Image (cartoon, rainbow, N blue to C red; front, side, top):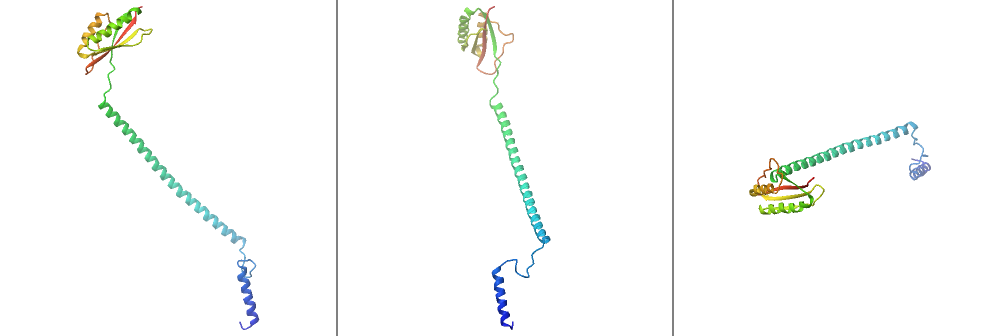
Length: 191
């Protein structure tokens, strides 16, 4: 410190050292060895791998929880739909009993030219009994009619069908509780 020449050289050296920054040419700074660089690189790789494994585990747990939640919601939706369908079926069974499809069939045998006249007589008999009749189209099997007759006058209609030559069923279908009965009348061709 007492020599002015050396102080100037020290100041110049400090100035050069400051301007050079992180240059490897500065004396006194040792370059890391290959083993040291390998250790640093190895630590960085292990840290990056650990972070990726941790992120993967966290995402996996989240995905499993999300899927379970979605599965439970779907299961609840299906269960609600099933319960609703069962409830509607019970309500419909109570509110709307299924209609009875027991229809009595009365048969006639007549030649084709007389079938139209006989069909008109059957419709007239249904009207006379206080009901109505409807005739379908004629085909190879004959003519099909439907008669709707009040249940109170059903026996009168059956008697008039016997007089016209009908074949009545052995055990006539008794109509359920109601005001009218529906009968199917078939006129087939005589062989």
